[in-house]
Length: 595
Ligand code: ADP
Image (cartoon, protein in one colour):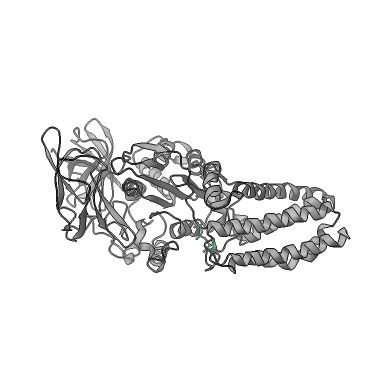
């Protein structure tokens, strides 16, 4: 292939000529150091190249070497539990996030260890002569104690299985099968396959997401649920709890695999985050969380171009595990930093900026990214379903949700968990504003809750939501005309809303018991609150004042509010005792007028 010649270097952007033959998004090696870059614009014989490594010292006149290939992810056993940069280069130690250089410039480090042997067990149902195609499971490797890696025929390969090698130990480049295609070619299949990161991996059918991705966080699961295969944004100003919320998702969510993309955050913060991972246990299995987690780190001190690719790298790995039949969650912190990388690169390309300096293609890039979420029927046999769920933090400057990244993200996600400074300042965590948030999955997941947890879930959720909305209206009335204007039932709304906020929505991510609520616990708590509301309503109908009700039940209500951090998920019968006590108090009140 012909070599190009550098004519200009501008930070992460290099312009080269003699590049007429180069393709858009082709990976090239730039300069004598052979830095990795990607062609992002072609004009005549000039190519504009975004370089993923620091370009200091690279000069006009040096050569550009083409590879003929787009940026690929390596996919195979050995990804789980590892940390990579945005180019999928393994970062040996968390320490490398804070020191520099992270990966020496120009050094090509393979993503997957070429020497490590994996124990491969071929699929018993397959034999030579069988027809196979992309997505067929031809064998298995136990990658970690939590993840069975299902070895797939790569998409677009189709033919007759010529040979399937026996059970044994293979490295990622050893052929474990051969497929003979219709035109007589023999294709070796290995444990590793490659896929271009900017292209979504194919599937058979995309389905409506209707199963919740449980997180153990009550406001997420019950008020604004996300479904497996759904999309969510968490916008919030600095310090409002984005990172803590994403970490809770990474730790507690019922995804089989979690891919954590740290995008443009500060190196030492990221290192702290990552350091906590090895000690954490999966609440669903008790196993170390790292056995189901892949980390991608592109901190603010790493080259900006690699930050742009990091989310594609993350979602490509996610699709690969989805294709194996798993539910995968990708958390990105933060897509604002990713958009800033786009803006910086666009600026260097001297593109005409759109809103606030962001390139005009910001919305389409966001759309393409969120489009890669979904629950699918995968290619190949045996028939299976998998999902990719995307949850991203957005950090709008000054908390202004109308700025381009937040407002465009809102167009493409179906769940919105907005963090609120006032709530964070009042130490109401998670500081999700329940009046601004939304989830378009409530209808879709209601059936799951009804079937698997409680038929009343939807009704109780809607009642709680309506009490919270009414509380807001009443507070405005009180502000205008004072509390005296409120009737007894309105006061009950205020009291109940307080219990919902303090006892249900507020949840301490650092409390052993409170951090994670099973769906059963969530429903049990809701029942208690709804029961109080309904019974108190009846008492008011009988002429008992809200003041009397609260005087009588204040202690037990305080106990109910505290119960989230006292009663464990496995001792829900303790809620029966609480309910009995509450009913006892209310019965006594009721009798006092009945007589
Ligand atoms: P951001 O990423 O938005 O800048 P952080 O996630 O770092 O904010 O949160 C800031 C602080 O708020 C945390 O250090 C923690 O003390 C507190 N916090 C946030 N969410 C929670 C939570 N769910 N439970 C307890 N504390 C929280």
